[in-house]
Structure formats: C-alpha cells, structure tokens
Length: 364
Image (cartoon, rainbow, N blue to C red; front, side, top):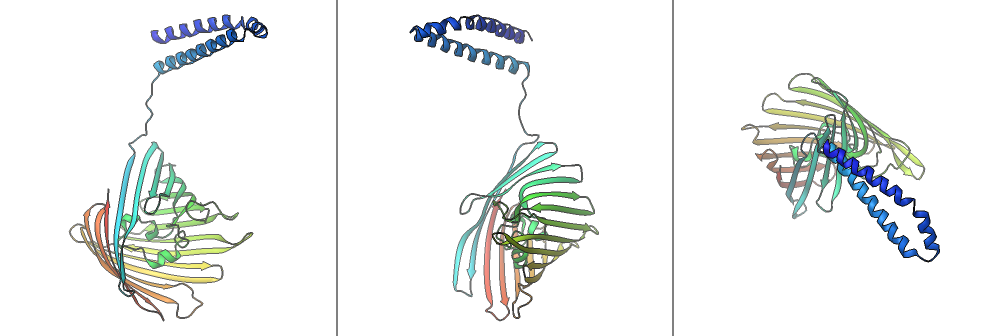
C-alpha cells in the first residue's frame, strides 16, 4: 500500500506540472505564428513523453495493487489420431495406400459451466471439423453452439477413432443428415441436450448446408434424438430430422429423415441395429443395418460382423444393395489399433464387389 500511495503522489505531481506547462501553450502558439515553430514542436514532444510516463505510472500502480493470473479452470487437453489405410479393390484389380484421417483436437473448461472444443482435419489441407461451446445449464443439461455433429443416429455420433469397423455403414453414409451432403455428419447450429441415467434427449437447429458454410435458404433445419435406457445392457431410441434444400435461387424442397436404433450388450457380446428412412423431394429410400461385436481379453481382440440392406429409391425396381462386412480389431492401446475388414457389396442387378481393407490407427 505504501508503494501505491507513493505512485499516486508522483502521478498527482506530474498532473500539476502538466497543467502548469499547458498554461503557457497559448504563448507558444503565438511564437509559432512568429516563426518559432521548432521551439513549440519540441514542447509538444515533451508533453507527449510526459503523458506516456503518466500512463505507465498508472498501470504500474494498479498492477501492484492487484495481480491475477489468467488461466482456464483446467489445463487444455490435446488429443490426436492418424489412420493409415491399405485398400485392395479385388474386383477392379487395383489397390492403394491412403492417409484416411489425421485429426487434432483440443478442449478446455474456461469456466466451471463453460467448455469449448476445436477439432481440425489435416489430410489434404487444414479443414475445421468442429468448433463449439458447451454451456452447462445444470447437472443434467447443457447448451451447445457452433459446428458439431447433428444429433441423429448412434453410429453417426460415434467418433471416427472409436468405430468398430473401418468404414461407417453404407446406410448411415447415404441417409444420415450431414453425411448425405458430404459434411461428415456435421453442421453449424445450436442444440440443447438433456441427459440422465435412464434417458437422453437432444434438440437442435441447424443451417442445413454442411460444415464451414452459410445457410443457403431462409429456413433452419430441425433435429431431434431420444434414447431410453431400459436396463444396464439395453437401450432403444429414435431420431428425426427435417429441413429444406435449395432447388433454385428462390425455391426449396422438403428433406426429411427418420431413424430407429437399439443396442444390447449381454456380457462380452454387443449387438446394434439401426433403421433410417429418407425422403428427398419426390424420392423416398430406406435402409437398415445390424452388427455384432465380440470382445476377448478385456476388449483387446474383437471379431466383428455387420449386415446392411439399402434401397436408395423405393419407387425403382432392382435398386437394392446388400453389404456384408466381417473383420478383426486388435487394440494395442486406448486409441491405437489395427483393423482388418472384408466388405462384400451385392447390388441387385449389378456386379458384386469385394473390398479388402487394413487400417492402422495411432492416437493419444
């Protein structure tokens, strides 16, 4: 406190001196008119230097009075993973190596009730995948705003580093909102989520245009998802999405998605089923997928099996497709694993395709 008082005493002395010097400014202006401009310019520089010293003194006084470190309520958490893939298109006679995903994410709690997360993709170029704020309204609810995954479908919301199969199902990639327009299941908007031990509900409003894009019409797309936990091993749920997609400059047409899901895990064996019905303009399609995952040695080794049935347009005959996928996951660390998959695509009336995939994921 004695230092602060001394600093303020110096400040007031500087102010008195500054006022006394300013009283002579008029005389200096007259001298400028009489051709003595150099002398006045020197005094102006002197006054500016005095003002700078004055401001520095004030800052010093207040910084000594109260010093507060600026920091988040918890350290910033970084995570990253990379996926290197080998794909053999045996039916087409060629194969290739590829860098499927390279993602970096960081998150932190700015306040006890305010979190943020940012995730970027860095394969071909740096691309913003997610950037959002979570404001916790209470113990069982939070509000989210920014760019994030649309609350629709269990498989869509599952992280890319946590998938049981190398590729997401064809049904989800074809019909899930955000994925059907090539935006990784994400969009820009806001949502409210309620979560308790026996149920989870999410409702959101979105642009409907995809990631890193402005809204392309005057309507906001709506999404809703509800999951009810019937027991420790069984959960069922449903999703609904509705919006408009621009057909012309001043015209938009309806776009709707409806989904059902169920998950059952009796011990080391886990089953999951999803059904999605899609309505686009005047076209209607549907698809369903069922999968089973068996975990051995505390989940380190996992044989996997999945079957899909997809019909992109119910009005067309011979438009169905079946996909059978089987494989093996070997977990080396929490986010590091090796996956082997064989995909067999059987389009009705088309040529059967066999795709063999090996993917190595490294992450932390």
